[in-house]
Length: 248
Length: 312
Image 1: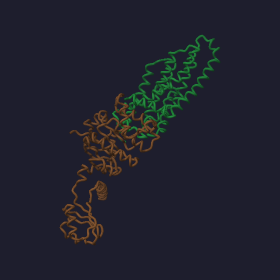
Image 2: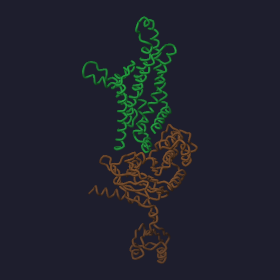
Image 3: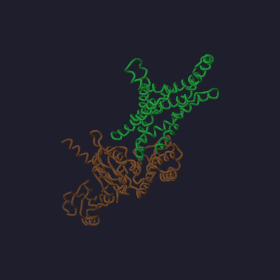
Image 4: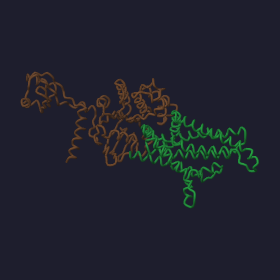
């Protein structure tokens, strides 16, 4: 049942031009960024060879690429999540799901999974670029995998937050704007420099937990943070829809 | 016989406003229940509660014997619902959409095509099944909505204004479809088109200001013995003169030649009586109890009394 809803969600994304445009834009920008980093790598290659413990191509090309991806997708994810529930409410199609033998949690999880499929597609396209380097050189696959996992968890967290924002309103634009605000805020939290009190803020920031994964450090606490973040927002979404059934 | 829908003391508040106030009714298999009411009377709220889209403030709903509030998934499996706005994913084709709905309603893979084909045939969607729902006319979209509601042949079908936007021929087809479905299913038809109710339903309920003000079998409604007659004469008749005749219990003059009389006589006897008086009878018809009259009487009357209460 969850899969039925997820599949429909995934397919309907490709039925609108939005998904294709987003995929194309992301790919073009990242390909450009990828090319410039590769170029940069070539220009400093001779200097690197003199160093005894020089960073490899994974550190200098793949990791920066994933970092840029996370920032670009921070801006684009709200566009993908904004329609999830708000559009169903606006077009009243939600009553089809509500009167079918499906629980609200199944609806929410189904929609979320559908979006995860799409994120997976984006990620595959992006990872393909550094992977193409393995034709000519040796990559640190473990580090790349850890970075990809980090990026996936991060995007999954973005989606969960966006899903919740989308359940609060029946206007997709408002959903997109508030998702963007929330994500940017969570991202920037760790920019507090200084002492003491900022530790908690640092801990709450998405970026704090993303950075180690990019460097190939797999911390249970970082993964737990992302999972809690995701589960938390999904539960909030379910609660929100339950409440709307009682009130509206 | 167990009832398909059983609603007990259903109440719904929106803040201080009471949209639905203590409604109870039952629906048996083979019933087509017309649910009538003026705009804002609480029709759609009631339908939304029956379909699980809205949680009631108070009361119980049983669908096919299963408590909708305790066990919503099992209860909704016996339900097909067409809301006021058909819930269509307009970017899908008719085929894709119906297959999705079938899967939502737990139709197994082997049955999927069969079920969709039969719904498409019954709603006359054969020609448009490959087209995007977005590009269909309102009438076709409405029919896709109906197809979605009857797809999994649920025991209970709730249709909220199903014939909106259809042309007269389609309306007749859909009415025929409802009658056929009504033989084996229980249908609630929510509408304010009164002739439709008269044509299709075998029971009727009227809701006004959130309260159930009328509930009757259609047969009983239409076959109440007539005691009122509309009479036109060619000569001027004074009211006093008519009142003198014991044949008339009550007289209501419309103009000098034309009046409505209440009588204990049946049509045959009364007409013979009038002819005997040589008044020059030109027209004699029974004054029918129509749904429309009942509807207007009940809903207008109710509004009148509540206004009076407010004034007091």
